[in-house]
Image 1 (cartoon, helix red, strand yellow):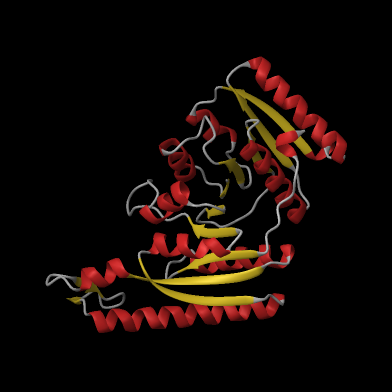
Image 2 (tube, helix red, strand yellow):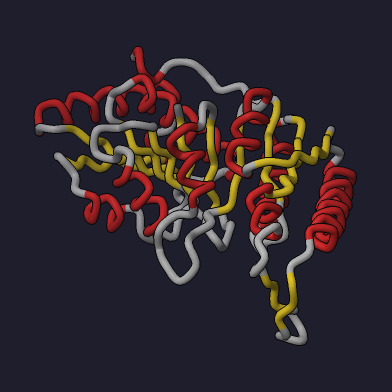
Length: 280
């Protein structure tokens, strides 16, 4: 079948690293994938120019993590913190790469975080980022939103737990990207020796059954019928899609699918407790 043919080749994985609590689990996930796929691992630490500009403001203050006392935010101190954080991230990357025998590289860039990641992803096949959100809210942070909307390669948005449970879920809508999503999900299943659930989405029952039959044929040819479940969803709403993936593993989503587009896609990623792999 046309949309389900082909295979992904992931040779370089880019993982965005910073001082947040998500960085270490994201690095471990990226390293595991790189090891299993035989890919090179690239760590990127971005010195956020937005923070540097804030530090130039006369009223910019920071609060000490231990003393809880506020003090004037100084650019030299901020740059010193950047260097210290980058050194920690580089050391962590070097250690995990040595343990797993990976080819690796660590880069430091200065600029707007999302734009620097977008620039670096031109050399990568897969980009991994944590699911950062606005403080005290459920909406995705601006960096993650920018990568969702403007990314050009595979983008893995990790949930806070960074766990890769099973089954892997693939959303299949019959599009070229939908076929790629199904293939990507198969690769994740192969890495985890697990099972997969395919959510077939369509605007009417006849189209859905036709798509489901093509998926069954694909699995039959590959001998995967016993490891895969197919569910049909007719014109699924966002709440129904969110409910369908609860308790499942990572969700593989074709970018710009009819039922998850732009704002609804960001809300879907932000709301569910799954990691999400966007396929373009």
